[in-house]
Length: 370
Image 1 (cartoon, rainbow, N blue to C red):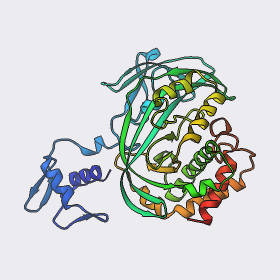
Image 2: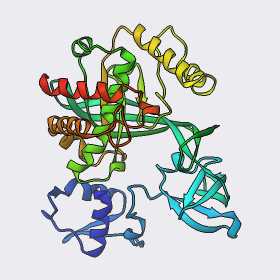
Image 3: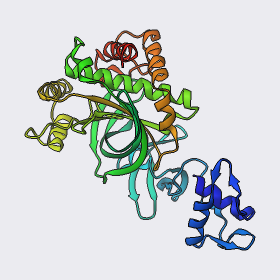
Image 4: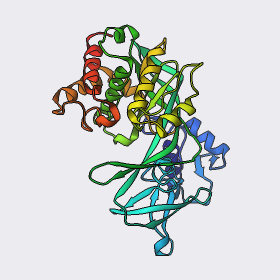
């Protein structure tokens, strides 16, 4: 974001020696732009050296400029919308129902090379929702205090399928498969790990604890933007193990993907069976059994910047950890639902019936002791 602004500023007026841009010292960035033949270093400063208008390449809606164009095949391929590159895999996959100005369109063909999506207007009583599985790997820790940390992470996610949900009732009327490559991103994150000693003191099974941690992460994801003054989509959350042995994505069907310990069923095979050929109850039973067999159980909640490279949220979230947990606990206590809802821990069908109860106990415990 910054380097795009510097390009636009240099186009308007040359930078001079010792000049700053806000609070940034720009010497290293200006020298880099000179190496890339974007700027020219003269005796009186750094001058724009290209024959293009830099603001044309700066998107006002997202960091990425590689948008997908949505084209309506029923209107001679008229362009009806654009979707940014990162959102496209979860929005305009094959056979998705894309909503534009309250009208449903069926995705018929995707041209990734040309960044075009061809759709046709249809009359249907359902919409589609992508099933994504997310993994977060810690690359570097910047600061740490009492199991609360922030630093660089590697995020990988996969859109493995989609659900067909009826309007108004959200009744699940079918599934579809999506064959897309894994998406990867290097960004910054804040995270905290719940100690095994705390978990052992709680009167819940590991599967119920996992539901509660996922519910607490859901609340934190919606609380954090209020303190950061950002959009909820600027952040994403993921629940995983400190050692990376298993993970649960922020957007998931029932419990999402569970990676098993070495020697058990392969994760992909487990995922395929759990999502496609077993009932939700059978899937939860399999996951609960797998969790109970794990020797090391250290749930970790990640809140990461939803942009490549990060945009500076993780350090602030790290400093606000206690405030965030206290705010989440207040929401859980004030919400009038009995077992969970989208206003607190998320829908019961996704989080489980004890998610709210466990999330409240966890929030209280985290505030009472490190």
